[in-house]
Image (cartoon, rainbow, N blue to C red; front, side, top):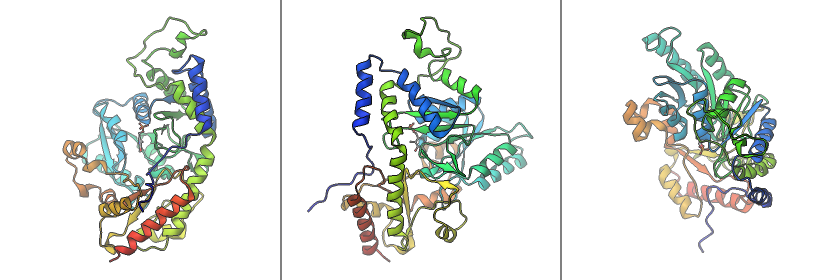
Length: 412
Ligand SMILES: *Cc1c(COP(=O)(O)O)cnc(C)c1O
């Protein structure tokens, strides 16, 4: 009998979301308004940031963040190769250059030592003269929801006078040294895309403690119009407005914000369920030599990572559960492994196809696969398994069973 297909991901939309949305639909105010404001306030207090600005995607958030710190044509921004399209394309919006850096082979987060190497090499080669480096910022991506080594990144950012914009699309809620992601770098960008840990269908949030950045991003998110442009059709507002810059159209609707408010209320319980599924997977796969389970701390070796799977320093949001296949112990490759799982009714994905092997970045900057060996090697071995709060125990069990069966059948 063909078993029901287990999707790779599903949002958890319940009565609260429906109730909140209905309320907005009936209120007569469906675009950016009181719900978006409330969502910003509640999000800011959740992460403990001074400002929160609701926008319609994390991509928009990253674009606004780079604009606020003054990225210009010809500037350079350091990003990991192991990330999604959005992290790099926003740099291209400015005709600036995304400079790719390899990842730590265990965590798959950007490797701070490799950033340092790059900056030192730049200085030595005269690409950037003394303090007029073209590298202006770093965008660390908290891969899968595991925070990057932010102390190291912030220290080197300080040394080289760089801003830190976090791509936190995967990492809500996550912590680093007891502090919430959203309060660590200069600006943090979150995603509420349909697959992310909390969702508004499409949406994003920017957090920062910097008043100047916050005010610039707020204005630029809505046509560059002077303060609180959205109020101009309300009783508190006025018809008069001034365009202070050629801004963008990145505001979040109240319909979306209403979903966000309901999701925010259960963010913690949803995260706990993700943690719970991750620990079931960890237990099930820990002693399977063909599989490496995700590393949850910053580490220099796979053996170290096994000794200290959970370290308090890193509070993981478990947006993704990414296993690595030990291909030398298997007779099939990653693609075939995925097909075998699909045949058993299990939806999976691959995060990510490294940027440097995509045609645009490969051809524009002449990158070769081996330029970032850790990202490239990982790419050939990774599979993201289903992990979401709506997933019943029975499905978690089926995923475990299917993975073990495929391993058993294809052992070398
Ligand atoms: C999903 C994602 C984004 C983009 O988020 P949107 O809200 O869809 O714009 C950015 N970076 C990473 C790493 C992502 O996974």
